[in-house]
Length: 341
Image 1 (cartoon, one colour):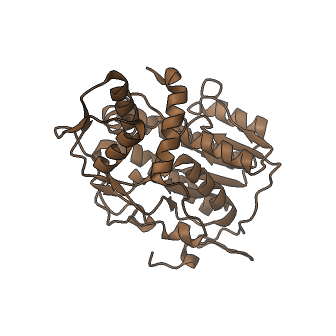
Image 2 (cartoon, helix red, strand yellow):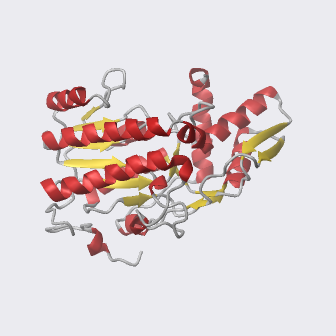
């Protein structure tokens, strides 16, 4: 990153005024305060709950979507009035892979804008001290220079297969920045790279590339299939971060960073889809052929995040891709009967 730490507003101790005028000094969070994790059953949210509990937080709260529909504004405000959280991580979102995003763009735009708007507005109304909004690396332009820096936001055209979802997440970032400017809220945003791990979506229709490949190769082993066919050419490069690393980064940012800029969260390295497919095949024990359906879309050619800002704050990923895949496959095998569908 060419810009120095001070321009991002991070603090390493002492009094602190961010570049947008917000006065706040990051430090250890109160382990006894009410901490609401929106989306606590999902891939990221469940990892954050595990991390918070491991760190000694005693009052982590969450609500299943069946009990609290965050698209319902009145219900969301009533929940905040009842629980009065001091801290919030907004990990709730409608997510999916290329096919789902390309097929249901209205759902991805409408649902996500409503969820995040209701949560952020309720957090303003009930004076939440610290809020972390989680976006996605798809917010960046399709052809952004690699690795992608935080200041690449809004500098070019989005990937058309998931532009509706990306626009919703961009709106969330700007909502956080607006809350900082208008209300002086010490709230922040983080943009994770491609995530994977326990509680991921392994459904054939709605999953991202990595869980889709795990399921595909595992089922090929079970059926004795001679070959597996994957979408695209296998040449796009992707960066993958285990959800437990992401959760650790979230807590680190809440305790060490304040500033208007979203913070990229990733490993700083990437692999091709072909390489990840080969690794997964090896982890699940598949020895057949892998073929590629080049009539299907590849998506963005490369999406590697510049994690210089995060590294300057003292955090780096700890879980290797092979180790993370091994853990994820183990979890998948333990839960596969519940994941059928």
